[in-house]
Length: 270
Image 1 (cartoon, rainbow, N blue to C red):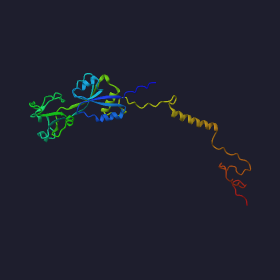
Image 2: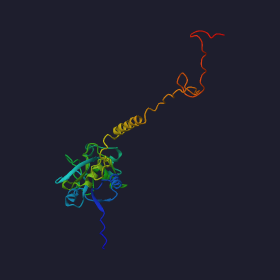
Image 3: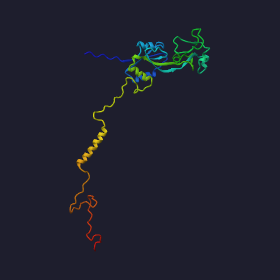
Image 4: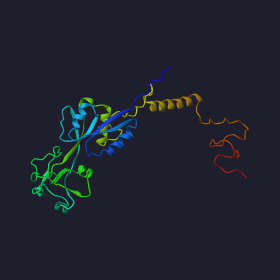
């Protein structure tokens, strides 16, 4: 007989944009779902939504804003914006800056800018490659070099990272991932991890303890009734028997000598 075809291993594809570090969540996934491989799909920040809708990934860690058409989106955290400057730049002397400090700088604004500015800071770039750049902190760390540094922009727009998936494809594995990124425990997760089965109650076992106690008590009382009174009955007095009970009804031992005859209440005559 032909051998049955082996079942293909289950795989869950998670899209991630640059700068996002899902290491902790990946570790938790592998602990809870060791039989489901987690495959990371690297995508650009602008392509995250399209990759999910195309079915190339089951869920994704994306940056907002994103086209939410057909997607469920859960914001997770917001990254601090930083300004990236040459290591010898004047801004490098400060611990942090605000948007006003960039007024005289040439601030580069790439086409795939990940920050939502109300108004773009700085002067327009006139020479390619000259100026400073404001990006989410994780991207500055990702592309860090010795000749550049970065400083937080305290009042700049943050970059939100979110978990997204196609709403119509909300599977048990997606729910598992939602529980993981939200910090739920394995017991409280809404995914496929089964709950402990409820203990089965045998028929007629309701009130077993009370019934056992009652039955036990009835058995004891019944046994006592059938077996009779367990207390010793007084041994009948037999004339001449020295082992007869004493005046207090205690059995055994020597009998006390009988009192001499005489007048009632009087002394014995000599």
